[in-house]
Length: 115
Image 1: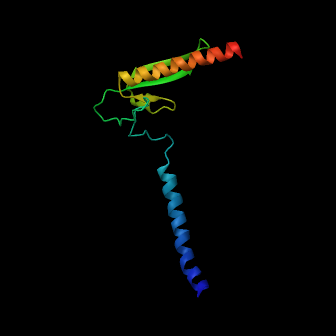
Image 2: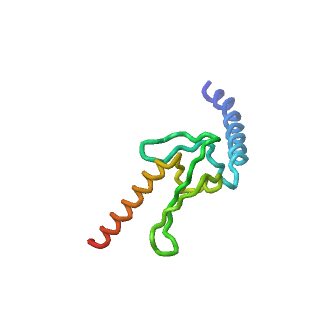
Image 3: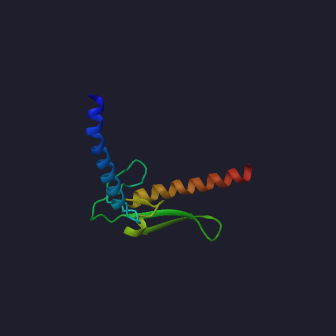
């Protein structure tokens, strides 16, 4: 009985595997899809962005001056989708993140000079 059941079910699993593989291939685009939902990165905020909000974007890099740099710009969908970009709901959250960034830079400078 088990052998008969296994023979009946096997084609279904094979068909499912083929459909899933095709669907996964077709659904995986070359470029990652942008996230339609953004949450504020501000400390203790987490506000969800709506389409009419005027949000800001922040990111850091180790720029051409061989020093850590902090960038801030008005909302841009292309920049928002980039890895490492922080989504910020407004001035207060941007100020909090800037303060954290400045504290981290100073702390790292002190560690390097004393260590």
